[in-house]
Length: 432
Image (cartoon, rainbow, N blue to C red; front, side, top):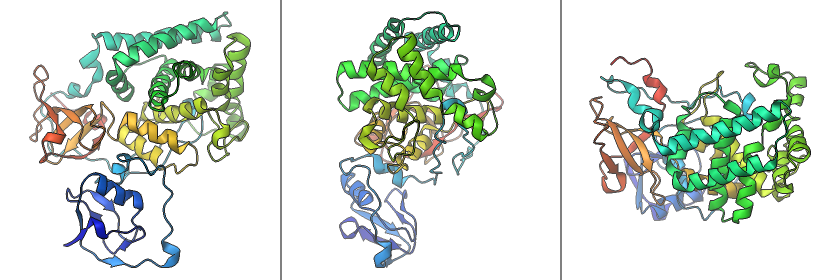
C-alpha cells in the first residue's frame, strides 16, 4: 500500500489503481484524473494523506483537461466523490414529473448483512409522526392545494388569494418543521393527491433553496406560489397521456411540453397571478444550456425562480414513488443533480440546494461500517458524511427501542461511519 501526502497531489494526476481516503472511501477510480475539487475536499476535511495500491502515471497533455467545477467555494458537497458505492449519474428525462421514467436505479443495491428479526415498521416516517402537529400541517397543505386543483379542473372560479394563503401557511410551517418536512418528502408515505403532493414538495424545497440564496421575503413568497402552481397545466391534458406508463410518442411528448403554456394561461387568465409567478409557470422547463422548452432560454435569461423550481422539481420527481416506478434514495438523487455539469441546471442553485438538503438528506436510512442501520435526523453542515443519526437496528439485526431512541452524533464517534444509503423497500416482506 502506497501512502501519498495530500500536499503532493496535483490536478490531472492519474493513478494506476484506485485512491482511497483513510476511511477507505473511494476518492478517485484508477486511470481517472484527480480534480482540484477533490484535493480541496481533502484539505477542507483535514485529511493529510491518501492511500493506493498503484502509482502515479504522468498524464499526457490531452488527458489533463480539468473537470468543470460547479463552484470553487463549496467546501462540503464534494463528499459525493468519496462515497464507497458507485452510483449511476442518470438524471430523469427533462419531462414533467407525471411522466418521468426512472428505470435507472442505483447501480449498487446493498443487501442486509443480517436478516432483521422484527417488523420493519421502524423505517416508516408515518408511524413516527402520524399523530404529530408537523405531519398534520404537511398533509393539510396537500389537502388544501388538492382542493384548489379540483376547483380549477372543474372550471370553478378561484382567486390567487387561495394560493397566497397556502403559501403563507407553508412558509410559517416550514420554518417550524424544516427537518420534518424534508423527512416527509423523502419518506413519500402520504398517498393520493399526487399532483398536489408533488407541488407542495417542490414548493418546500424551493423555499429552502431561495432562503439559502438570501432572496427577499417577497421573492420567496412568489417562488413558493409559482412552485405550487408550476404543473397545474397538466390538468388541461388528457389523462391518457399524463398517466401513461410506457414511453411517449413524439406527438404525445409535444402535448406534454405544452403544459407550461397551459399553466401560464391558468395563472394569468384565471387566477390573475403576478408576473413573477407566471415566469415560473412558463420557464421551469427551460435549461441552463438553452435546450429546454418552450422558448429555449439559457443561463441567467431564465428567471431565478424558475431555475430554483426546476431543480426542486427534478429532485422531488426522483425521490417520489410513482405508480409506474420506484423512487430512488435521496443520496442518489443528490448525486445525480451534482453530475449535471451545467447542462439543465444553474450551478449556483445546485450548490445552494445541496447545502440545504445534504448528501444524506434528513430521513435517509443508512448502513454503517458495522452493519448497523440508522436514520439521519440532523445534518452537520461542515461535515456532511457525519450527520446526527437515530439508530434503528444494531449490528446483529435487532430492532432497537424506539421509545428510548439511541441518538449518535457521528462527529463524536470516529469508529462509526456511513457505508452508504439504503432503500428501506429492500426490507419489504420481512417477517416479524
